[in-house]
Image 1 (cartoon, rainbow, N blue to C red):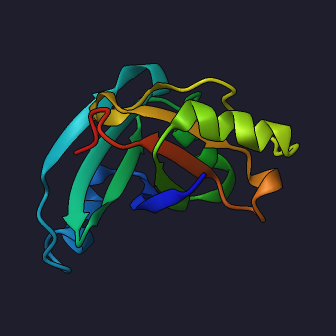
Image 2 (image 1 turned 90 degrees about the horizontal axis):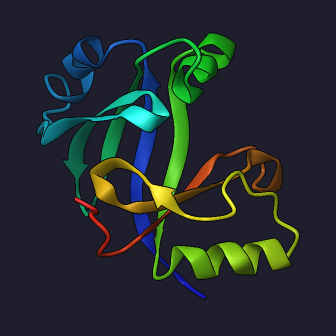
Length: 138
């Protein structure tokens, strides 16, 4: 089972508006859209860069995954998203290889895409998001 590409890099920020002063105004990246993913408690600003994008992640509350991340580690690199052909099949393959998963089944993420997360304990300390091509990816 192969991975296709790095789909995006997720960066946890205290404020999207403040972060845009660097990412948009400083680097010149275009802000494509801002979306709220209510079940994850996050606002997501999408900035295309080459064939992938930077996603700025702003917590909508302190008890959300990104809110807890920022409280514990501060703003910064949150996750790496890898696009795969079939998220469910990749999860099954990883589980069979005793990889620790956060999600054992795909769920809906930003843009309506199927997504699932792999625990950093099994990846050398990096939170990995898997996403499936053609399922709402921008």
